[in-house]
Each structure stands twice: as structure tokens, then as C-alpha cells.
Image (cartoon, rainbow, N blue to C red; front, top):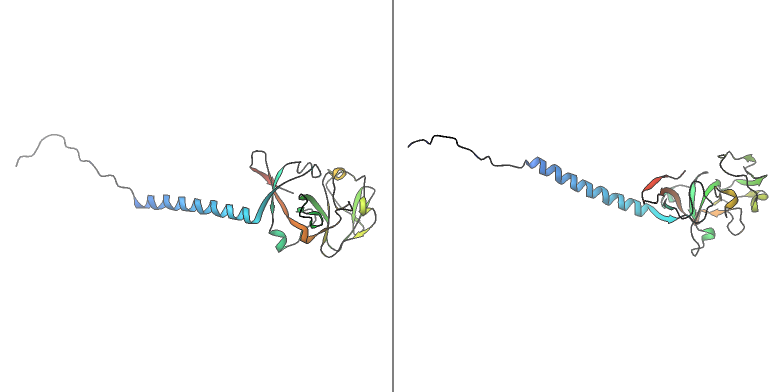
Length: 194
């Protein structure tokens, strides 16, 4: 047999490395699981609501969407400074109220000369809070019950809060959750609420 002279080309068969297929598959499955878990956690723990009114400005403004953590207060109690979401007097027909906790169960609160006193001691607060013109029901010393919290809006002179007789101290059973994240106008979270 005679050999052919000249150029010959061998076509190499392309093989896909099985490790690459496995890695791509693992990335896709991992991504799907992560998105699913994030969705489940946010919607089982969190709930979205809107702020009504300007009582929490400048931290939260009227109409702003927030995510609240509905589970945290089943495991613990609110702390001073927490921003909570509650239904006043448990009224299911009311909109959610969003206010800041200033006094805890068993404490005595008194608002005098526009300042908050807890157990007779001036409450150290951020200077952005206005001095209150109206002390409401806290104009006289008020001792909270074992499951009651005293809340105020950050915009103190434009807030219907625990100073008002129709709201008063907030019972733990009426607290829906802790305000968790602000949601911006572009539906992205803009940060933790402090």
C-alpha cells in the first residue's frame, strides 16, 4: 500500500469535562436554594407595612414602606430604643402604629418640662428629638404594668402615642413586630431602622 503524501488533518473530538458540568449544576442548584430560603425567611419572619403620618420623621416618613420582624418578640421583649409596630389597644380595624419604646414594664415614666424621666432619671436621648409641648397622660407619674411599654414618636410634637389617652401604654400582646428595614422608593432596602 502506498502512503499518501501531503498534509493530513486530524479532527479532535471535543469533550466536555464532567467536572465543569457538575460545578455549573451545583451553582444553579445552590442559587435556587438560596433564593428560596431568602424568600421563605423574609416572608415568614418579616412583613411589609407602611408608615402613616409624620410622627417618626426624620427616621421614617409618611408612606414609607418598612419590613418588620414578626418573630423577634415571641423570643424576647422589646428594648428601650426599639422601633415597634403595634395595633393600639389591639384594635384590628386600626392601621399599624410605628413608634419608639422609651419605657419598659414596671418602670415609672413622667414627662416634665418637655423631657422624659424614667424612674425619676432624665432619659438620655438624641438631641434631634424636640422637647414636648404636651405631656399628655404622662404629665403625672405613670407606672407601667408587667406587660406594658411606653412609646413615643420621634417627631414628638406631631405624634399620637402613649401620651394620648386613647392609646396609652402598649401591651406586649398588641405588638406586631419590630421595625427592621426601610424600603426605598426603588423597592430596595435602604438600611436597618435604629
